Image 1: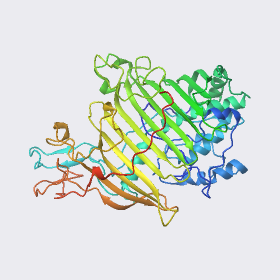
Image 2: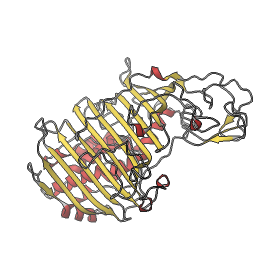
Image 3: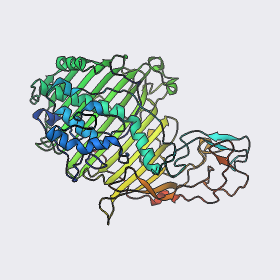
Image 4: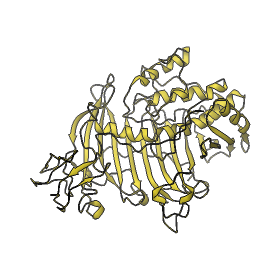
Amino acid sequence: MKNLSGIFLILIMIFVCFGFGLGCGTDGSAPYVTTTSISTAFPLGLAFSSPTQKTTSSDAIKKQSKQNNQNNQKNKKGKPIVATDITSSSTYATKVAAITDMVNGTTVAACDFNLTISTSTDNATCYGPIVYYNNQHPDGAGAAGNFPPGDNGIWTSTEGTTTEACSAAQLTKKVQGVSSLVDSMIMSTASMFCIAKVYGKTLPTEGTTLTLTTEVAAAYVTNDVGLVVTSATIERSANDSSGNPIYITTIAGTTTSGSDVTVRLKHIPTSTDNSSYKGKLSWKIGSSVQNSNCGQSDYNSEGQTYAGSIAYEKPSSTNIRYKLMSAQFCGNTSHASPFVSSTNWSVDPTKGFTDGSIEGGWAGNFNYAVFSFNPSNSIGEYQYAWQAGYMDGATRVFNVALTSDTTVTTTTNGTAYFGFGPSINANTNLGTISGMYCNWAGPNGKLSGAAIQALAQKQTISKTSSATQFSVVTDNIAYAPVNSCSTSSAQFQYGLTESYGTTGPASHSLVASTTITGVSPTPAVDVEL
């Protein structure tokens, strides 16, 4: 039995392309992808990886993926790319190559994948560490204290002892935190199409449903996936208003640890060869583990439900768009209410837990992401926001714009911003930066009603084609952990240990939040509106 980690939370985001190091051929061309008739109902190219993901040994696998597919050459593990190679830190290219091979598999073994139901809320070490301060805090001198982890934005320019830009490391860390779960949801449906192909199935005709429960259940047992399948179907709905076919794929079952899992894929090819498409992937997973934020919910004793949705759209060969939302909801899958409606499977941000009202609402770890980029080179705009609890009142937000260097086309430049944005509950202007709370949890800070400052942290970053990570070009990140973000107090000290050691700065180096430009990605169309 493969190891199944405990259940998640989520979140965002997902990258499709063939840039970011992502599934492009070594000559910059689109990756080698073959399709079968059954795969017309599946979004080849849907994967989840950070645009600032470091390239490591897994990227060497990506660089061989085209040859592996064409010539059956071996990767460094001595075997062709397979879905069971995928980890949270795999590049987009590796994921796309593995999922494509699986969908086009010819044996049940080729339909295998790792069902990993786990998530992480870890941050990069350079982002939001615990910061200690003495008893001379300018906003309310008194007892010494500390700012909890996650409240302090980009604290150091680079990650640990490396030269990796902190903004790149933190965006990657947040994406990796949910990617194992998202990968599993994508691959569970991809595996269904692989199994259908192995058994010689064809897509259902309009108004009919292809039932694959027996075949998928048997294959999952053979491959030791760890999910006891109770239902697996592909439904061919009536065409949309533009005459495009609609396919709804669902799989449901229970993990060996007792978690109920439902995955639903609504896919609409907008070209006959499925080179352009739109759709939505949604999931909900029940867990008996209680969420402390659900303490007042009538359903708290049941545990919680992890739910997510990814609206995706590929309108052309030069543009991919995503909108991801995920969170932890109170109660089991029968009582939790994560989606907009029974016909719209988008996670609903407005359904925050309310005692006596929205008992099955979201209680923690809401992730929100909107990406729009060119799949050939990763150039595009990315918004990623997260909120730890439904009563936090604000989101932490990263905005990143990647562009091609105007003189060295093999170099990717980036501009990254960090700040705080609107609460998820408001469902307005999500993913945008309103300003900075430089004193979130300190004396008389944000939690005591201090106003937000119209400021943001900024890093410009760059990565050459031969580099493994993004490096810092310029920084505007320095501030003091006080309400105004600057202080001239010589008595106030703070630092990463209780010996403090830092004072100031008298004047912060942050930028005005009103100057943030180039980060307003167009979200994927919602196919259920």
